[in-house]
Image 1 (spheres, rainbow, N blue to C red):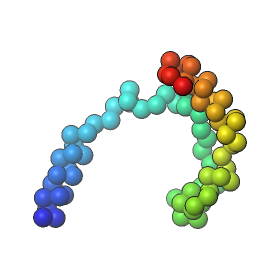
Image 2: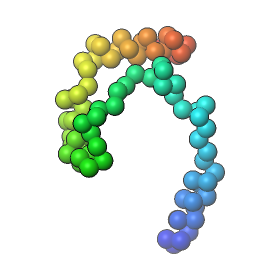
Image 3: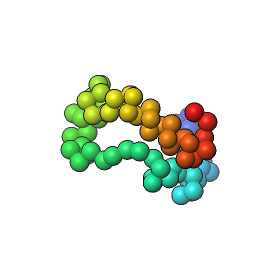
Length: 77
């Protein structure tokens, strides 16, 4: 049974291709890299419940970014 599951997973992985054109346009996608977060401390930073609340900007700021991005990319808001 385990071999069947692994085979099915491998086939699904191979059949699923991601192309650069499928990824978000980084010039239009807001976000930042937190240089404080590393692979070594990820379990005490981003993997801790509530971490995002300590680093995320207020909703009134991010909502304006979302609306602006949607307008640029011709997406409904």
